[in-house]
Image (cartoon, rainbow, N blue to C red; front, side, top):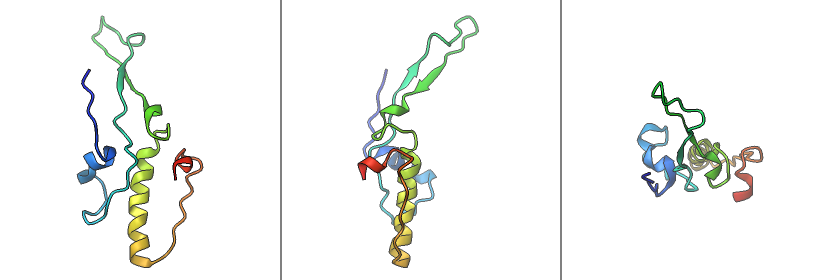
Length: 100
């Protein structure tokens, strides 16, 4: 199995596909890069069907929501810079609250 290390998280790797402007620093917590694991118990060799699962619990906060929250915080930083307003992001239900 080949494991790729994503410096700057998955957001940095796919930044060109995201709405984050080029002049804005993308916030990251080294999210993504979770392993893809083969599930032979639910795969079907006779029909040549292989089933894989992502281990999202291995993200920094243990949640699949890390990716979306880092983009949301990056976009929120634009608003703070342009309007000088304070944005409070509720992260209590996403698992990130413990890391901020």
